[in-house]
Length: 345
Ligand code: DNO
Image (cartoon, rainbow, N blue to C red; front, side):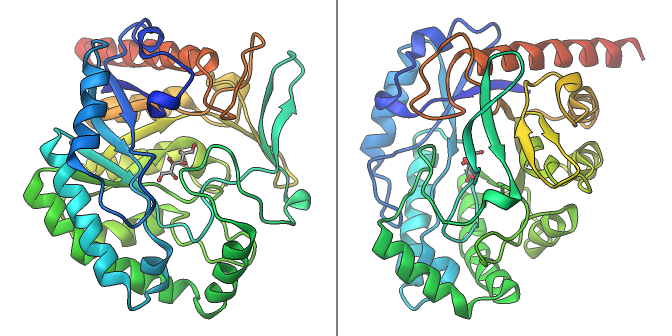
C-alpha cells in the first residue's frame, strides 16, 4: 500500500510541504484542472505538476480523475473524437510516469450530498445525505466538472433517452477503446463506484454493487481494467458488504486504488461521513484494511473526505488537511498492525 493524499494542484490552499509532514505519506493524487472535459491533457502540464510535487519530496503516480465527457456516456456521434482525446491523455499520463488513472461513469453528477456542513455532536461538521432533501440538482464545490444551469437542463433532457442498459453499452464501447491503450502504456484504469450508489434525479447509475463492478471488470479481462475500492461510496448502501467486495476484487488482483473513509448509515436511508475510525461509523475499517493487506494490495491508498475540525476553513468541503491527516495516520496504524499479523502467521 502506498499512502497517498489528494491535492488539487497549485490552487489548493493546502501546501505540499504540510502534506509531506504526514507520517508515511509518499504520493500525491492529483489532476489537470485547467483543461475542459474532453480535451487532451498536455504533457507539459503534467510534467509541470510532477516537478512541483517532486520538488516537495513527494511522488505523482496517480491521477484522479480524467473526466469522461458526457457525449461519451450519451453515446453521441462526437464520442470517437473525444475517446481519441482520452487515449491521448492516457498516453501523456504514462509519459509523465503515472501508473493509475481513476475515473467514473456517473451521468452528469459526481458525488452528491444534500448537506455540506452537517453538525456532529463533537462540534465538527461533515458531509451528509438525506433522501428527503434531494430535490434540486446542484453543482458541488468539490467536483472536477460543473455545468451552467442551461447546460445542465439540456443534459438532463438528453438523458431522458438513456436507460441503464444503454449506459452499459456506451460504457463498454468506451472501455473497449481505452483499456488496450492503458494496457500498452502500463497504466491501470481504476473505475470509481457511483456515489451514492443509486440513481439520483432520474439519471441512471450503473456502478453501484459488487455485481456491477464485476460486470465492468469482465467487459475486458485485463489488470488495466481495474477498480477503485471506495469504501465510503459503496458502504453508504448497507447491502454492500465492503470487506467482501475488497476480498472479491483483491483476490482477482483488480483493485488498482483504494479510497478509505467511513460512513454512518441510518435506517431512513440517510447517511453522514463520520470520522475514519470504525466505531464512529457503520463500516468495519479494520476488516477492509485487513482484506487489502491479506490479498496483497500494493497500490495507492488515500484517506477520503474528512470532517471540518479545529476551525479549519474548507473551501472544498471534505478536502481539508486536518481530518484527512488523522485518517491517514489511522490507515497507517491499521496497515502496520495487519502487516505484523501477517508476518506472525
Ligand atoms: C469524491 C471523490 C470523487 C472521485 C471521482 C472519481 O470526493 O471520491 O469525486 O474523485 O468520482 O472519478
